[in-house]
Every structure is written in structure tokens, then in C-alpha cells.
Amino acid sequence: MQTKNTDATPSAYPGRNLQGPQKRRVRNGDATNNLVFSASADGNDRVFPRILGLYVSSGSVIADVTYGKGVFWRYVPRDRYELLATDIQDGVDCRELPYKDGKIDCVVLDPPYMHTPGGTAHKVHTPFEEHYRNNASGNRTESKYHEAILDLYRDAGREAYRVLRDRGVLIVKCQDEVCSNRQRFTHMEIMRMYDDLGYVTEDLFVVMRNNRPGVSRAIRQIHARKNHSYFLVFWKRGETKGIWEPSQ
Figure 1: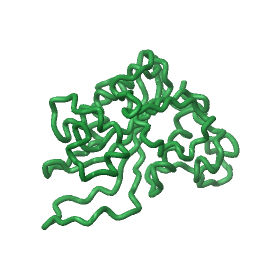
Figure 2: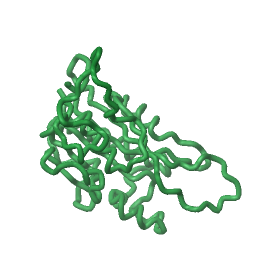
Figure 3: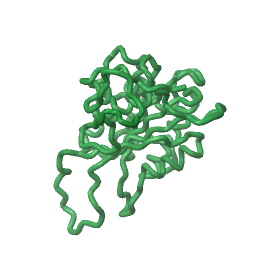
Figure 4: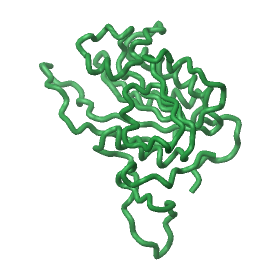
């Protein structure tokens, strides 16, 4: 069973009391505010270690299949987990992983949020292209625009399901968007999609941007500008019976 990581250092997991095991609340116990919250203005590199601290035990095998520049791992101690870091720049596509069935404890997935077949459709978005190297994987779908994004999440989620052990954890980064003047609540679409694939949605974390978005030249604003993204936490339902929960 997947277990909580309770022995991490305070510097690695800001805002948590990790000097000892996390105890259940008891009558007449000491009050504490050292909790992990569902929304934060901290960056991905701060929020991600907290998620690991809740849902992935020390020593677990974690496959980050869209590793990029490794921003998520900036404050995670290198000896805490067995990290398998791959990306399309290394020749490993998140939709075709080189791992055997059921051998991975946790998969981390952070694909591009907008569709750029072959990394050429939005040449002006250089920082985006450099950060999300999986753009170079090409189209590989008959869908367009937002539907192509969903295809990528579906194919990568299906492959993650194959390599995860029963009750293994999948951590997914995503962001909602407006496509063709229509609201697309990507996090909800992914949750429904992954339920069909055999996952159970366990948790959701909201990460807010601290900096202001770029200046818009739109004549009239139609929708609220997105200034937040999500970490979604799933676990593989598999064949194991019973209720899943991180051990205390």
C-alpha cells in the first residue's frame, strides 16, 4: 500500500511539521497549523514536494515522464526516492514508456497545455517551447487544438496505468483554457477521462500565479484570464480490493 512520507526535512517541505510522524487529531491534543492546503500561491517547485509528502513514501520508484528541466524536483532531496527522469529530448515519449507492466510506484505527468504539433505551430512562444520539451513528439492524433491536448493526456494516462502497480499514484499537472471562445475546464475533463481508464481521483491542488499575465490587446474581455493551474492526484484502481488510503 502506498504510504505517507513522514521523514522529510522541513526545508524540503515548507509549511509542514516533519520532525516526527504526523499524528491524528486527538482530544486535548496540542493545536497545530502545520497542514498541507489545497490552494497555494507558492510555485510548482514548492507545492510538488508537499504532494509527495502526503502520497508517496520514501524509497518509492517515481517515473517523471515529462521531466523537462526538473523544476518540480528542485526542493526534493535526491536520496528520498528512486527517480526515473525521462523526456522527449531523451528519446522517451510519455505515451511509450520503457518500463515493464506494474513496476512503478508513482508516475508524474506534466505535458504541454496547448497543442503545438512538432513544436512549430506557435514559434513566438519560445519560453513555452523550451520548457515543455514534449511538444517535439509531434501530432500523432487526428484531433485539433484542445481535443489534441486531451488525446495526449488520455494516451499518457493509459500508458501510466500500464506501468503503475495496483494502487500506484499518478500526479498530473494541468491547466484550464479557453479554446475557440469556449471555456474548457481541462481538470474536470481529465478526471472524467481517467475514471474511465481505471483511476480514482484522490486529491486536487490549486497553484496560483504570483506574476501578472501579459498585457492583452483584446478589445473586450469575454472570460476571466486564467492565473491558476492544478496538480491532480489519482491512484490506480487495479484488481486490489478494499479502500485506498496512505498509511499513517
